[in-house]
Length: 315
Image (cartoon, rainbow, N blue to C red):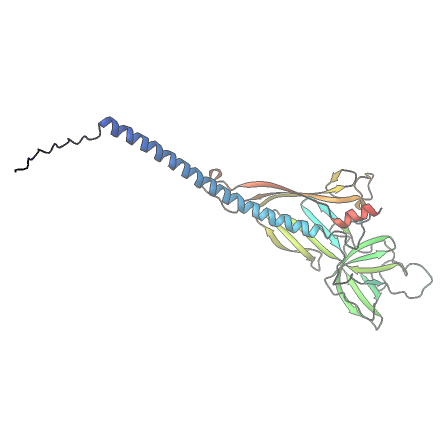
């Protein structure tokens, strides 16, 4: 038998119409444009975030350093109305404390020449900027460049030692910088009479912060040079503004303290904390962020040293 062959029917292939092509292209362009816009926005957002994060990182570093140093204020040294352990003056901060290495810094009593008068003549025991002190345990640990607290009865002076010399088996001699103020506090003897009993010196630690306006840098120092100028290192760059104010138990704040004026709300022994504000700018710019202008941000910190809180709770 012969098999029948049936003719194969071929279907005509139908292409896309012009309208379909145009619609497809339009949809594709919309999708691509949306994806491109989203990608560009994400890219700009990330660059913006990266730039601002660098500023935040600098601010965190400054804040942590301030918090650590300010917490030292007043260790083993109770503030008085006219001589506080913490001070602010415009863009400058200073913090004083007694060091522990590991024990509290030694208190050295003044040399007593045995005279019956309670005070020495005007000046030091060996000159206007020279005082002899007694060794403790047969020795002394002070050296030139140390910052010390001179205590004469209830009066204090901040002294920068320019030289320290051995005098005998029981005595040593210090010479100090002849200035009236150091770190915003009274210094030198001026009209102060040294008491033969009740005068002493003790080493202090100091931390200072200030803004170098010319370089827009925040500086930090842990010591003063023999001229009484803080020896600083750069803490942060591009610091456009740096402001500090003291907080008091009365709920007030002041740019500094004073125990001799008529205002009783700003005495040094009423300091409870500090408020610091800083405006920091990014160290580089990005044409895709903030129209290519470096980003600036304000930061604020409030710190209440535990030692000052202890003083107030004890009173």
